[in-house]
Image (cartoon, rainbow, N blue to C red; front, side, top):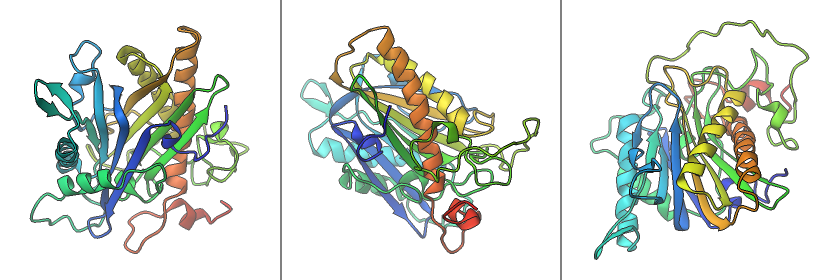
Amino acid sequence: MRAGARNLITDVAGLYVGNVADPVLRSGVSVLVGDAPFTAAVHVMGGAPGTRETDLLAPDKLVQTVDAIVLSGGSAFGLDACSGVTDALAALGRGFAVGAARVPIVPGAILFDLLNGGDKAWGRNPYAGMGRAALEQAGTGFTIGTAGAGYGAATGVLKGGLGSASAVLGNGVTVGALVAVNALGSVTLGDGPHFWAAPWELGAEFGGLGLPAAFDAGAEPAPRKRMGEATTIAIVATDAALTQAQAQRMAIAAHDGMARAIVPSHTPMDGDLVFAISTGARALADPVADPFLLGHAAACVLARAIARGVYEARAMPGDLQPSWAKRFGDTGA
């Protein structure tokens, strides 16, 4: 397993990401879109999710592919970003065919960033416009860290952020992840700079610090946010051809990566969820071994993406939490 050329989810060919953020609002939106509709599924393990159009992603439902997926700040207000993306895709003639009508299918998930110091006194919900703008920005290259849906994110200790990573497997299949990290838990161990995800790091993509010599395995963390203020929302993607049921299994396995990178994760106060998508470009060579490997790869890639999102976050005036770089410096010393 090696990182893809960009080390972004867009190493899965045919996928594009667009980010938009408002520095006054201290919030943003990320949109994942493809050249064509893609198979999608979802699995929710947090106790406080905020979602749109996720029920239709169950394998027994009529619609088997979607047109885009949205990750957004703004709590429940941010779900309106999906409306902006839906309207923009409809204008392009994209969507699920019902006779002559086209209905874009745009699931989404939100995180809570309403108490991060930004000006939330908007007169009109801004998220539909931000969703449309993010779609217009979609491309293969995009910024991580303080960007998109992770722009105003926070963790239990440090600034959160938008993360992404990819892996190319020995069989040629590509797996990628995109994640907005706004967790109640911590991505670093104790008071130090070391990332929980360090065992799965490729190269020095989030500092190359490894794990500390020792840590307190019996520590009992206390919640640093209130109910409903935290979540980590993610997308894992592959070019392997998967059914919706197989994609759902990949989403379930990917949650292992969240648990590796954030401690604690999947709490009653988090809305942790993972979307899984397949572009279907590569047939499975082995219907047993390949899905097994994809689940493992998705977990590894998501753990790396989470760490990268926090590692790449940048300090800004008015921050309520320090960025990793601000607290620990470029070397993590």
